Length: 508
Image 1 (cartoon, helix red, strand yellow):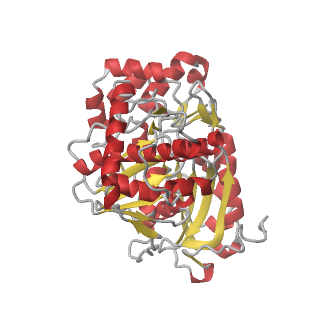
Image 2 (spheres, rainbow, N blue to C red; image 1 turned 135 degrees about the vertical axis):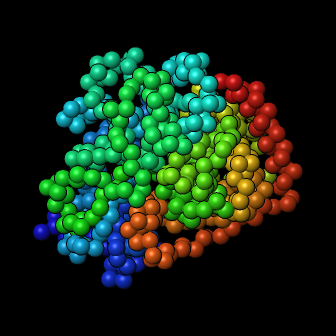
Image 3 (cartoon, rainbow, N blue to C red; image 1 turned 90 degrees about the vertical axis):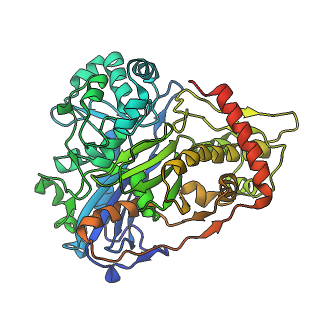
């Protein structure tokens, strides 16, 4: 009998959802390991959330001024197990759930021993302690050549410098690790007794050749590891092999399910809000941020500021990532004592030439300059500058970072027709989307569907589990058209942004 009598959300009033009785089979269970929480939700064959069958467990990275950014991998594995217990140990789901998928924040790393026990914490994409080793790699390798082959620049968020840092600063832990896994791979190993890396996890390491889909020998050598310590790579349509049936029998609703290799949350975030084709740029704005477009071919040349992650033999995700979006908003709230409602009002104010210029790099820059040591800069601050003006400058600065990505992205993706924005920041500060639309000079469609990353994970599994079922399409909340009267102002703002960037960040 289930330990949980009722579904986790008995009174679920989510609009874009369907009751279990009306849900189309096959159902799929999705799990998302994010920067601030672990989530799980059940979806039907149309990609619609099944009402009531979801759960969330908050968590936080442990961070430090030295660049530390880690989380306990066993804590995360326990969170996933608890979500599956609460949502999937149910008789009414038996035989209906045919897929379980897991996505996570990208570029994570856990070392495990021969028994599969963790011998390190989980290092996250934000851990920058390998900056000295990154500098060495940039001296040894042609970074432009690396980017074109791997689809990723050399940066502290990728694994080659992190492996070097571990070998040099933690030799005992490095030696104790028999295998190295992403957080998603580690969770599956603990819960299922087997694991693999989804292509869209392997690509985010910076060690996978984007054209061949194999671990790249030259990058492995530069990292100081061999292929045998990494997982095999599976494309999205390939379920895990050798799942231990004795381990999964605890979840009665998953008796007929295929289990899929972990993938990166960026891919799922794109798919979940409608970014499945070359005509759509998706702006994600959560703790970190990104702009991406899903291409159905491998581009010959990748712009210098972007990455290009392989998904399978016919698709890739082209885009750029920002460290500080929701994190910058949280900094405003904590430091300037301004809540979400006040910040949203500030974002809705008319433009003002008294607004400071801001480079919003609180934890370093990824796209487009990949300056991991960059830090935030406020310019044109006077005795008359108050907290709302500082906040407005930060919100415009975040839009400026997206603009740098947008300029390179549109130069490489020639079929773009629309921009869709989603994520926590867009829901908490919808007025900021007007700043973004004005700054980019293009309409921005606001998609407010909740758990969009989980939905994208579901759609990825359904490509192989239910290819002939018509998918549902959530309605957007609205469109933010660029205002003609603001265009001269934002051109000036961006000129100042670029001047500050060139003077203080470029070349780091």
